[in-house]
Amino acid sequence: MAGTPQICNMKVVVVGSGGREHTIIKKIKMNPEVTEIYALPGNGGIAADATCVDIGAKDIDGIVKFSVENKIDYVIVAPDDPLVLGAVDALEAVGIPCFGPRANAAIVEGSKVFSKNLMKKYGIPTAAYETFDDADKALEYLKTAPIPTVVKADGLALGKGVIIAMTREEAYEAVKSIMLDKAFGASGNQIVIEEFMEGPEITVLSFTDGNVVVPMVSSMDHKRAHDNDEGLNTGGMGTIAPNPYYTKEVADICMEKIFLPTINALNAEGRTFKGCLYFGLMLTKDGPKVVEYNSRFGDPETQVVLPLLESDLLTIMMATTNGTLAETEVKFKDANACCVIMASDGYPEKYEKGYEITIPEEVADKVFVAGAKLVDGKLLTNGGRVLGCSGVGDTLPEAIKNAYDVVSKVHFGNQYFRKDIGARALKAYKE
Ligand code: AMP
Ligand code: GLY
Image 1 (cartoon, rainbow, N blue to C red):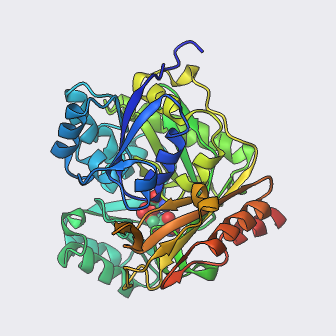
Image 2 (cartoon, rainbow, N blue to C red):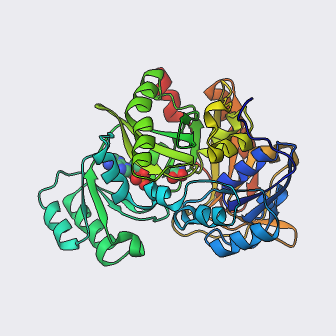
């Protein structure tokens, strides 16, 4: 195909250490021209599929140095922190092409104040909001603000900087904890207080080279820790794809009112976005609205989206870098996928770790490891979200069954997982 990047004998670095990175690595490994994959830093499970190097994802100098010394052909920067810190800018400066946006575009995730102002300026539908850099003014505003309301720390906060306040008291507490007690450090120097929206949530990851935007298959996250969407918010306890609420009609509205206007807005601001732009959407009674942008693949959305990707991932990624996405095939299977996260019991609060994990060889391809480390050849739990088990099927019930079949074969001490991943989507199909 004209314009499609040629891949030949490539050494690739993937920055990051989660289930998302493991999924990306397994996918690019399928390309026979990829001769070497290094994960910086990776984890004990990723070590089965890539060479893990002990360089942290935020160590930009270390990433650049390693990539230069090892003559790396392409770097995939997967997590938000290094993107916001300018990993792509630093690698480009030494002539190494990368997947991911530069820091000036990654700011769509790095600053909620920035992204809300961008949406307002360009008429992109999102919740009404006010921004504050002064706690007293925020508290004053809250005296008369509509309740429930949503209080958000401006900067990165490991997905925890959003507080849904159901009462005025909770809203005051949220402002105090973010702005005065600095629960999320400098990320809370500014806050957004916004309208509480209702409706099903949809994640749409998209590839973009700044010229065109190509949405991937839609997905649904399950953020609460316990069944029936109870318990605390987590990084995500499971996902399914496609999302039944993302009909053709909704997709068309999103393209016209959200996706294209966002790409155009960023271009107009001199902040061209290349890489994966994550649209967190809510399907309100007034139509789809943006809940958040992320500047990267979602975790665990990646674990259901990439297994459905039929085209070659590395070819697409390189097309986003060199601006040839329009000529590059991006095709998804007409199938369903489900990912169930197996966590350490107690996550997202206190949990024990250090238990041995067994993953039978026959399901290893379907297991994406996040919080684990290798000690004397044994894989041990080392985090809250330990791994994700994925299943693909022609129908959603089949995909769910296949994912839970994998869960039943993987074992570790103190394990916990939700039993109802996909139940909400199944209900939506019946509505
Ligand atoms: P965010 O980090 O901005 O995606 O927020 C995390 C989660 O909080 C979202 O996935 C939603 O479930 C919820 N949320 C965020 N903003 C709103 C809002 N304005 N109204 C209702 N729920 C929200
Ligand atoms: N699963 C939500 C995120 O990646 O931000």
